[in-house]
Image (cartoon, rainbow, N blue to C red; front, side, top):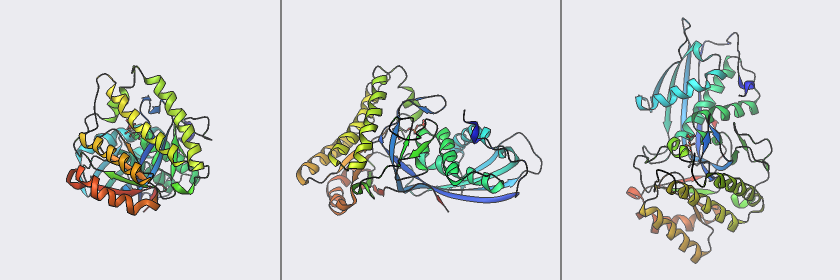
Length: 359
Ligand code: DP6
């Protein structure tokens, strides 16, 4: 357990305040699927940090009049109480309490909103947990903490991971890696690091148009999904493969070999779903329109030679990835061919970004 994250502020500089941060979602190119307690990934993963899909969170804090042993918070989502979100936040605050000695001395009012549509099938746990973690690290600083800027980000990533694994990859951008890996300097299972090598210009401002194929409730929660990798017949080989793909992808990010990029990214997405299809119990999270869209993308790419590809998370939605220079053609293609495959013709135009922002 990383004790250097423990804070022990003995006297508080202030008794009340308010902090606010925006944190983006991220899209994994090499997938995290399989974990050990507590929130330790079975393989390293790599993602693009996004921009448009983000959570904005403010935390108001007030010193308790009389100290007690409880973590006291109330949670508002878009200004109204949202009891269904409270258990996840409670668990998060309990998990991070060992690293924040001030937590039981204050009352907190947490206010959150997402920039993406309600129940769009887009997971908000990455942006939500990273925004929350970043806010609490900022509160610690206001109360008298003395972490450097870099350590604040690292601690926030460490804590966001305890809320949701993939959330630790949303603090910085444009590319982050979570999980120990021999080719990534300072990489760790406990927090994500920024990919520090130069990235080829083709990946600058890379576009991710998220096609909302199915906005229904998740068929399998990610926690259950990760659990299915325990005792999975292909698990150990999958973890080796993910680490190899990450190694290959780090080279591709430097060289700009877009064909190799496409091959790795699409294979990662399909492998993630293959793992679910071959677990016990088994699941198919793709919908017929997911496959239709994938086939459309493949024929568009073949016909036009435009290097557009797809990735998937643990659901039916399709992330369409492409270099910014082809934005006009790809958006026209999406509008003409793919929008009809989306629920209510809905899709979200996102692009690579740099992580959390102070509001
Ligand atoms: C398929 O981070 O949502 O999106 O740690 O249980 O909260 P928990 O899981 P979560 O899993 C994300 C899985 C994924 C792949 C990825 O983002 O790497």
